[in-house]
Image 1: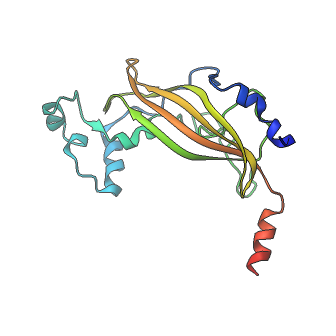
Image 2: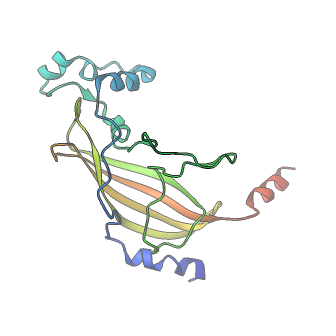
Image 3: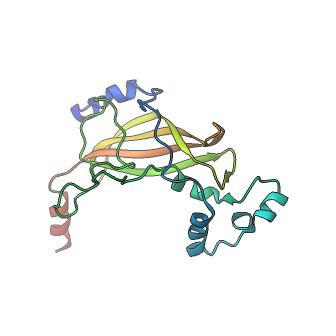
Length: 197
């Protein structure tokens, strides 16, 4: 085993651990009819369950339901809140200081990395998302950690599991998100450019 792979052993040993130190705040907004309309509009998604309360109730729902595919829209906390600053750097391509989509804090078990991206997502939908719901994400359980060298660098593929609840503590969905955290090759872009020329 190479040194960079061995650095991931504490994460491999932590499989099964919940890394969420405290419950995440609820999504930025309640599920509301106008936001559902804006979600449907570019998709031209014409299903009356998502805009006609009478039809939704007639089909056994309490109110208009949001499309299942919109689930993550309702779980993200705001990037900005009154009285806070999101961007504190004027540098080109500066990122927000706080990002609800940032990498998971492992408390120092994972080695420091320079890059991170999601690789896949799997969702089990348990209950419908209804107008008036306020969703929150609970848990950040590590299901797997596999060190791997790729074209972008050396790092580890990990799978994380969370549960989504509404304001009544009803389980709405279970989510498993795959990620890749890595250290990129410093001269990779330069090498690629040279190969093209």
